Amino acid sequence: MNQKQARVLAVVLVVHVIVLRFTWRDLSRRSDAAVRGPKRLWRLASALNTTGSVAYWLFGRRRPVAVSGSEAAVD
Image 1 (cartoon, rainbow, N blue to C red):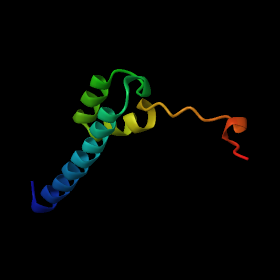
Image 2 (image 1 turned 60 degrees about the horizontal axis):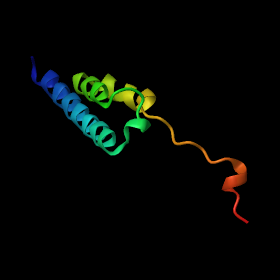
Image 3 (image 1 turned 90 degrees about the vertical axis):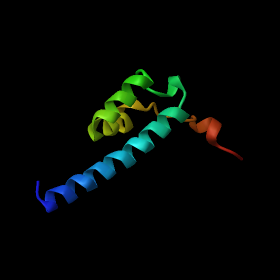
């Protein structure tokens, strides 16, 4: 591996660790009901590669329930 490849690998590794840390922090703060599927599975998937973290952010998190228009209006 030449020096340029080593630098690229180091940058990719740093990005993976940063994204992994954000993913695990979000998982630890969310209730089980706010996550689609088992948290343990999402931790494993995100640890294996960055695609697992991206999948969690796109598909693994349940969106908060929106408040209906009549309840949201404050007069």
